[in-house]
Image (cartoon, rainbow, N blue to C red; front, side, top):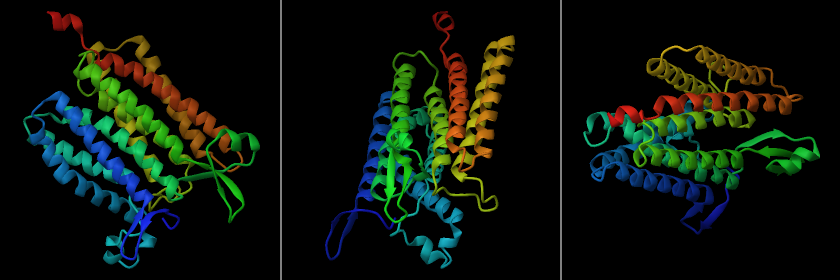
Length: 329
């Protein structure tokens, strides 16, 4: 983060805008998590105190571990370099995995809130934190994407100008922030539909968050030029691969739940076919991406991912919808 902009400094203190926004993101996420968990159960504090106590340090440790593992060439000095966080270096997926593990353990051990309820409360909180945290990249020069050659796309997309290279690149972080904001609105609405209107079963909020986050991350991670790549597969982006695996698991769980609830129907095989075709289109567009066809391929990726999203949402609404007849009986 050598380009990180200072907010305040004196002889002993340096405060960066990137750090301020990241702190606000964590604070906002924590407050929203607290408020939503309290809406499920008023006595949720007994579970939340352990999540806040252990979730933050575990999330930070996993976040740093992710970055250090996939950028091993930057930490040849060993443990001292790893512990030196003055230049930044954290990964979003690692932080989310660390906090999720704490939530899972607390949900299983604590009798106040189940793990499903805790994840439902954490989903809008995570989306809000990501929305704010992505904006921090505007002060650090991170999340720069591919170069834009035509004036039309330079005017239509968020861009950043590199004076050293005299080139214009797409700026990825605004899109990730907007996507997270939309996911936040969607998951808040879903949370109210689950725990206030009782239209859907618990777990619906988490499922919608996972669907929206993984699909948008698969797309926008492909745009970035500063991704973390797998150590032994240098051409594969870690965030993209991880989200693809989570997306696949989410879709499989949804399809299995649908089959258990409604049985096998003729239309169901058509739905599965649409999911497979959408995933295949997005994968092929990413696999055959080059500097000369990225705009066309990204359009193909968007079409495939949108098809997956719409189809998965239709399945999700049926899987988690409350059977009002059964409730009345």
